[in-house]
Length: 308
Image (cartoon, rainbow, N blue to C red; front, side, top):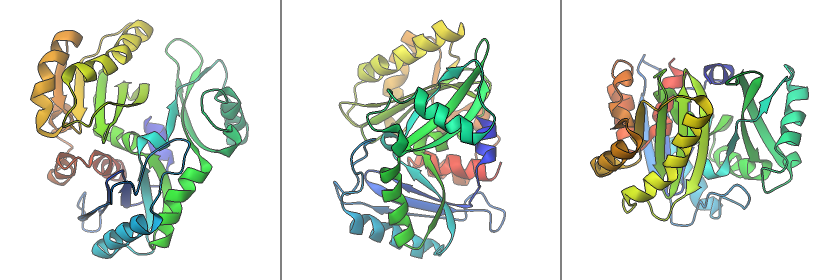
């Protein structure tokens, strides 16, 4: 996972286009993690995340919101990392006995392997991947895959507003640098009604799944969250023969305490908000913590990656 992030370009400007807002940040110009942050709301229905259908339904509104953030940050013409909703990016962990080293061989192999796992022609996809050791033998290919025309929509909105997209990444993938623990950790992150569940251990991504929930975090029942993340925890325990040691919650704002008790009883490990993780206390600056506390975990994660 670390090699994947290290291999990417590292723009110091990051923009997130979400279902209800556009946010941007830049950092490092005076040695700080975050130099400045700006955020603009989007009209309801302007962005409707989907892996298949058009995502940006009101292009002028999205472009104008990005443009206002660009002007406030003073970053027109800059190369940026562009973060997309998780629903627009599919993440897989296929396993291979042998995996090609050359991208021109690896990408066709991944498209062929995942051809039945996505609801569109794999030849229409953009693919990013990193090889990591499998649990017992062989190689797992951490693979992010998105429909080309959907990515182009987001890129066009950024370009029309005066930006140069240099990296495109799903928002929860961008959040992962905030998890510095080598122990098995489950992250449950809500963005709108989308719940993304990851399990990382020893700086490897072991589980990634995104699900559309029945309600946003403000109205979600603790049992609904437990029902969704329990299978991921059980899969990890059965496959990796190991137990979770911590659960981190992101996007639940002041409701974390309502979820803590039920999750700790059923999964038998500590539950904390992402920003309270003990392993982050020495690295998560006040600026990154402020971003994460405003539900901008993806921006904070990217800036941590940028400054790593």
